Length: 362
Image (cartoon, rainbow, N blue to C red):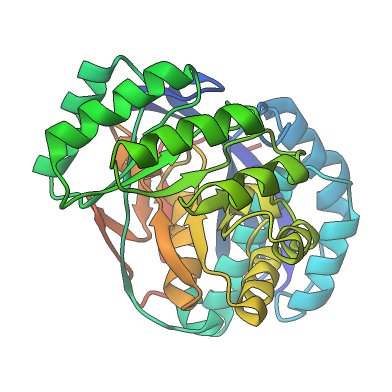
């Protein structure tokens, strides 16, 4: 099964509600779709979101990286030579992790098809069903409390609350949400780099003193501030999850060895795909550090790949893969089944994709 061509398309999927964080507001998923063709007629699909404020990747940048750099390095390669393909992919261009992730996902899709097995079984096969949280966008306290209740009424037991825009208002937001949902629901908070270290410590201690029972706080400080992240981790009892600080296995190793965070968040668009994500899992297993698997604003296509990773590995204990349920429609035929908080996998080879509707490839 040899790679004969890599084609690129685009999908546009409206969100049910605007997605608001400390970094941005988004109204639709506008992602690049990658289609890898082979001499056997098998097709592998991948996806990349242009998340410039996090990964630095833009729509034009993703296209350029694939068309001008990645494509020429792997055309003609045999899918069974996975290690060589991934070495070439990694060396084809510096950074550009989302473009690499889209190609990586399509390669793993083909790898599963080659061996007639679902990818999660090839990677470990720990389980075939996972439970995700759902994200509550940052708004006024009353609206966030109502959004939280709407999620609870749909069966969600874990909410991830976006904060980081105003620390005093963040406390009011969390109090309103906790009062609305009670204490049988787990609340995670995600500051998206919105606080400085002292502000984070002050705000999180206030939340502790208020008895809000926060499960974890995700990326309280800017991504590059490992020392600031460690300062927060050392001075609050709420577990700290490193997200934007972790792009590579090296980042994960550094943060774990520094004890700068309690947990690691793996996102395929930061790691450049499954190949490096698996390395982060191995590092975390060695040190006994639990991981979350998360996603950007992505369709079911690339999130399905993240689901297979989460299903494969026991070190992944927390799931934040709500991207598809935030979308108002689903153009992806096949893949994982998203039933609100419950995500299940079938035993189709690869990732089980049949078609991506409404996409024209070039």
